[in-house]
Length: 390
Image (tube, rainbow, N blue to C red):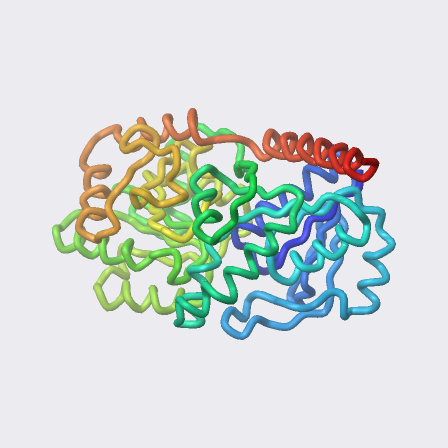
């Protein structure tokens, strides 16, 4: 089987979707067939990958310069190369540059097109265009047309189906969950001490962490304002922010203005997966108040290390979480979010209990997920053969 994965983000941009697609490609290519990655070309991409990467000419997105866009059909050298590949199935993880390209390749070759909704695109475009009417009439309608053209539409959980319905998509939806590449890890004092020392943290007080892009959509300011409340109450804690993003400096300045710079630390991006595993295994909880994410990988990764996550109740990415059982839920309000963190700090054993619950109910390995992906691909290929004959 020859599989094409098409996505608009790729290292050095390491958002959640890039992480998903890299795991797809790596495991599919290793265990099931030839899997190729197709991306917009980024001059800063470097390193070797365990699969072939094809790229086409692209330009920086004006409003998100870390991302790229382009029309692969207009890159003659790339188009000649990709047209010769005998794809059996193509999978688009974005409805934009690479999604349009995947759709064209699928049509030309008469093969199935899978399309996954990973993100709440409407929120992005509202922020950019400042016009809800314009977003609804132009952007969202074009996104729905893209998913209407796919042979199989996937979402990452049941809650994200509601997002597709809100956009106007009425077809069938198949749920394919995300997984984790971090193995089950027991917690131990030695690991925690080494992490606290590495980042210059006080080993005698609780540690909380945020892992992900530092952008407004992630609702990070709620974390900082909540921690400000606890700090003014005299409650001690460590907070470690891991990641990069366009608003990182703004959040750093906010923490400094609130007098949190001795307790709140910004570690930047961590590419070392084992180091990240040790952070998860050392933190009392992950703070993840995003209303934007559909099914964040971070809580799944953390759950492998008995580390629970604090979500905003009702958020799409909190599906399956029961408060104090396998994670924590708080209102999207700084006072309530602060109270939830305070409860974790003051209730002995509560975080670990929820951590065990998270591991037992939320964790699933990428190997298990990708086996399901491959089985679904096989089904779609055989279904297309029957349709082509009839």
